[in-house]
Image (cartoon, rainbow over the protein chains, first blue to last red):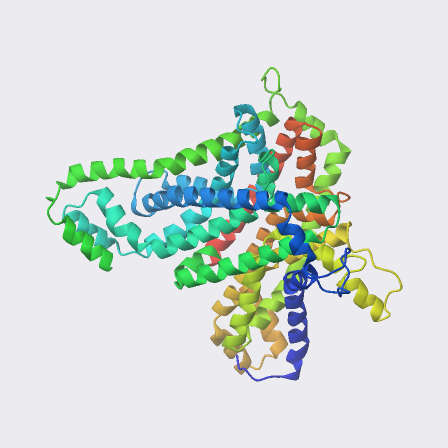
Length: 267
Length: 297
């Protein structure tokens, strides 16, 4: 279609821009509110201050939650990346009966509503004594993250020329050598992208965490608890930091991959 | 590539194995590689889900199979009301998402490349910010002293604040906001794939712009629109955070009901029944979604 501007395009453009504003408004509004001096969520803020950030950084509960979240996300995304990458390699290169079923099984945690995973893990962990343990929490996050690793890494491995591996095999390299010395080093950008993706997912996860974390506090869990109690502007400061964290992660992800295949697999 | 050639140089010393035995050893290696994820998926996903299904159809004490829990669930007005409300709210959210998302995706395809990238970047960015944060922001925006109510008051449209929060309206606004990218991004991609020559042919044959849109362009985007709408509907069914935060506990949906059953009333068996029902609905719709995607993409 031609790029000529017609007057009849104006209603569409206006409507679309309003939708775009609706979409972005939550992200745009939180940051200015976090610098407000008011105790209520007044807009526009009557005066500016950094009191909510001071409040946040001076509160050991939030600091503790931050440490927990970082540790949890690091462990979960690393474990998910390790298991997911190896499995993705087998799914792409291996030929065996039931391959499609195994793949569907790996993808299932992405499709099943997380509330069902949360309830199921709650009942199961309660019976096996894992409920409320940090290890159980890590496992819960790993299972939510692995489908994305398998998806991203499968796309990356498919893009890697199998003839290079065949040449290596002909030259006598073992399967392990092929994997560790040839395939994996070439997958580093995609693996980094998958790791960042999982890290952010784990860092933001609420539902499963609420059910199985017991007394362990993470940032989203603490934030959710605050929201259910009362309106506390400290949460606005937390939200602003989370938005910055998410956008930084997205930029990092784009810098790391630059390859459209990885991005296509994610959207 | 450089890594690969170096590794091949290093491996030259080893003799090439006989093909048959190599193939057999190959498989054992693969099994070892896939084993960790198989194990994790089985222990942390498959077994817990099957266990939940078992809870739904068995007596907690004796372990004997029973349909008692399903009966209790089906005969309770309270549970049924929440199920129907969830379906209704999800339908509302899906319709609003279509009405807002389709024009946005369409308009984006008409933009110059650079503007297009900016719009897409904004959509992807919202996609990336946590649901909890975006939901919370609506409390800030829609609250009694928030941006929207202040503006309405200032413009003289309302004399007292409009109640946006802690009702169904708030939930629909919040959920639509979260789910819009799931519709806009695939639709945008589908619209770009539409063969422009078809539209040119229609134009040459004298069709009006409106007619070209409704009779040529729109039908070509319907499969993707249907698939993404089903996806939005599925995601709405399981929403927990937005109804909890923006509904203030007054408009519980299925997920909030499951939370209460587990954490407040300790009725695990009913929570298990609800899980099975929600799972069945989700998987059925997902099968339709996959069929649509495989058929038209």
